[in-house]
Length: 463
Ligand code: PFF
Image 1 (cartoon, rainbow, N blue to C red):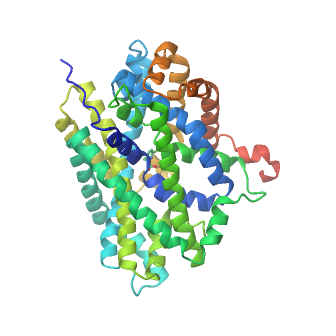
Image 2 (tube, helix red, strand yellow):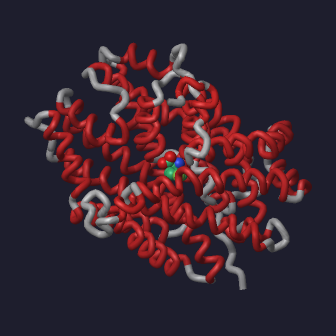
């Protein structure tokens, strides 16, 4: 017999849990370095545009599917289309993507936890820039440290999901998300007092001529997808715990606004520091772990600022890893009839095991020839596979499913239920049918290097 499905206890709890899923390492770690690498300006404006006009419609599509089917991704795709075997595979694609992303996301989350602890000891005091940067390399290359912090983070995530939707996910999100906003706003205000704040504002918001390229456009689109957590079945799963009186467009809009605010606050917090201390905006993926401690060390109140900053990253990562694990747990519960506890324990163990090669990638110990064979280490291989292929593919298929395959009557009824802004329905369907699929195909082509879109637009780039 089917057990009664848990639902969110309060509307605020649901909002915070979903916002917690969206806001993560993507907003705080990936967005700032992407802003730096893409030169700010157009990239930021396009990211905002794409979040609203492409990411948000797919986000609403997932919530609609979840609430209608009351299922996780696999059964949602199948049951909303006459038990279709083909669409069931699309559901599995989302679950597998969530599994792989969770594995290496836990490794990066572990680094943040490690840095929060190291900050308590003010590891940067009395050290040169090179020495501080060297600490990141030590952490990255140490098998024991990576495994230890991965284990701790997996345990924290598993423990919270084990507690269930209300007691676990909702309760923790209600505590962690407001704390995040307070900490982030404090750091943002602090950065605004730095001399580099004006230059940072200009860099982030003012478009410069000659800076716009097709790949900037596509990077911004990819970033909007990553940041909103679409394409992983997370929002199908969280949508399945929604009540019929909840307003899907309004919920989605609030979350998109929160997500954009946090991403922008993160950039506005980091760039004034970069410009004040004359660093390069193009520091790349190591931006947070390598550069910020150097800057913290020069600031008054460094102990507090750096510890709080890394705790902030830990919080945001945790609310995202919870949502990724919940996809696996919900799927295992309904497909294999497991209890939540059994599903939580076994999924956590499986993800932990799969994360081990990623955690050991820096040390290059487990699969020493992996990089020689595939050109990227284990961690990078799966980051690339999921980010460049699985995630956009799953996103496009979700848009196509709701735009073309889902019965229009069901789609309309579910979308309208509880919604006060009914006019959104028609533009939403139009975007799902025509705009989102084309845009995502372009991302996939560009990211996979099948087509160099920059070169198509600017033949001078072809050497
Ligand atoms: N949206 C969250 C973040 O930006 O960190 C979680 C996440 C979703 C991460 C999807 C990665 C991903 F591919």
